[in-house]
Length: 281
Image (cartoon, rainbow, N blue to C red):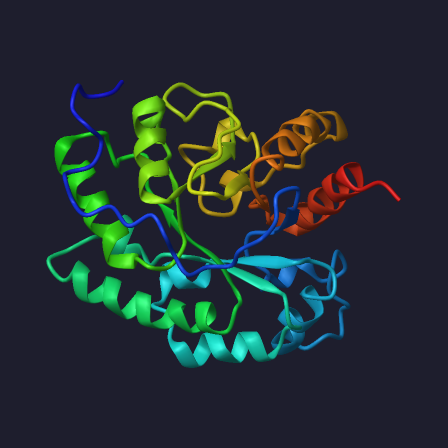
């Protein structure tokens, strides 16, 4: 359901960013988050100290989607420590703080500036894949929301940015065109088949493909917490349907794939399975 006007307010469009430049054909598969105690036995050895989780994780995956930055404002110091624990070439996708997406207030511009300073540390080190702007279902396609999103994306420039919409009001060519003009990626989501959620499409905007697998737990989607909502294990058949989609998207740009179904190591299992399907031995 789109408005008759343009998506964004008439602010300066800045299509170029200073993120990682990858190659068409690349598909990077990883997980959303890594620091889960219940991944012991699924990924991490039982005796591995938690402070060694990231170093160990980076032995198996090419990037990680950082979730902690949604709950606590990241700092340059904390992000630099993460780069020091990972090999050269390992990338980070970093989620914006909740004060910019779910709980914006009068001081959001100061919060955006603080987030920008921290995330720029990753960019300067050549380790930033993108900034993930995840918007809630309650973020509707209104003139006020469009203006705010435009201002937020400009405040985070020149970092690479992708946007995840959680409702179908933002689905449509006009929105995709505006993202493309601004050099911003559109996150595609695999989610339960419920009314009001974004459609499953394969779309590249801003020179980067991004797919998040949230699971298809319909019963817990609206009533669950951030664990039970995503507690879902994809079957091999469900993952196979994404193989031609992802390969098709990769013809246009690098594609990042993040599994968010983290409960009891399900994300690890599904990420490995999908990687084996995409890149058989």
